[in-house]
Length: 370
Image (cartoon, rainbow, N blue to C red; front, side, top):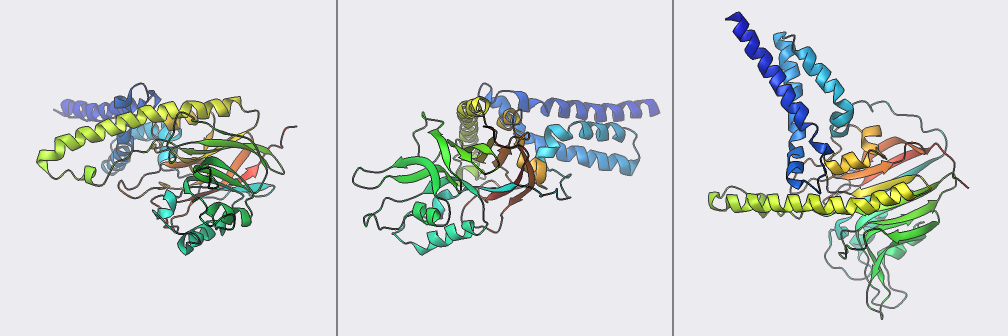
């Protein structure tokens, strides 16, 4: 009887760890090629939580199998746990030497559908961002408006230029009679920009696009990329599954949107990685990726760049809390050979958007080439 009990106990422990080991490798599957498999990566945080529960339970009950749970978690720390809930960045690293501050933010079109020129709320919004004294702004869902009162009309773009960001790049649109306005993903910089281009020319939408430019900083030349990948486009109504008659249709619709999103973001990643691998300069890429840290997109990017939150953040690092809570889908990525992220903050006090701004401080490790 005792042998049977031990056999069942061992089977439960090692069977569960085997299932976790399989689930924890699903991030390696190309989400654009197998989007259905990519859906299962949403379950990885839940399995991490269960592992910690099992570890605590085994300590409480003095089960020796808990040693294997601990070893399993330690082995997977740099694979998933570090990116889900980093816990090793409590002590602040040295900020001595040349450094830069970078803010990335999905501004959600200022949370205002329409406004007239000199709209005070938009000015207040921009001034709040300016107060954080970032050297570079990588913004998404930026909305500037064509001048309606000639060249003297106020625009969000000019407001940032006058605040000390004279160099900027992004997609422009508007009629020939009006000054073409800046919108979508944009870059604002205190330092000169060159090699400016839009990376995803097939994407004609103003809200989901990516742009790149090379910034000539005093200590280093950096390739900057402002990213906004395909949105999930899930409404609050679609998440209401209480009606049994509509539940199946809603679940099928959710699955369809999620899988098509994986496919599209996989396609959008290709020109971004092409830019990173082909550039002679180190890269700093940031924005709204609409992907969780356990997904394939995150895995592919971290083969080349470091996730700033995993390097210098702490906890979940939630950047989005609207229809789906507790999501980290906004990232800053940097080249560890050229930069060291010494501080990464999610600015939860900024309430203007359905996203929170991310502010990173980077120490320059390598001087600019040539």
